[in-house]
Length: 115
Image 1 (cartoon, rainbow, N blue to C red):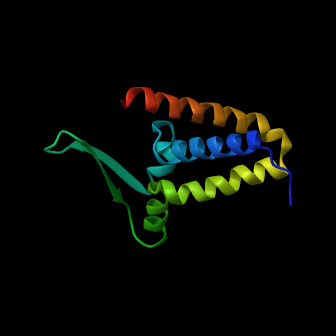
Image 2: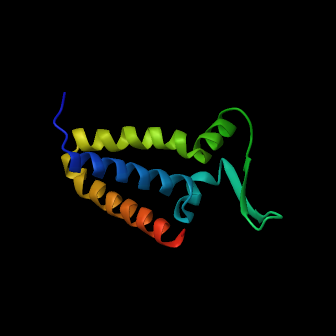
């Protein structure tokens, strides 16, 4: 089919992870989510922060809100975009590499501060 090295696979996985997180969770992309959902945070009785999502509208608008709030769903589409860029737009490789580096940094930071 196509030749994919282990390094390329790691780059694609990390780039997809970072792009997914960017779309679903990061503050910088709230403008994408705002027309479809709102998110609030509250602390429960155990002291844990709980993320509450409210979907706006109905029909297609609500469906897009549900999609944008689901990291599993967005991850599929981000994977498709990342692989498509890798295969058909070689000039996009630096962007994929930047996303992968940011994704690896996020994984390292999470591991360092979680325990």
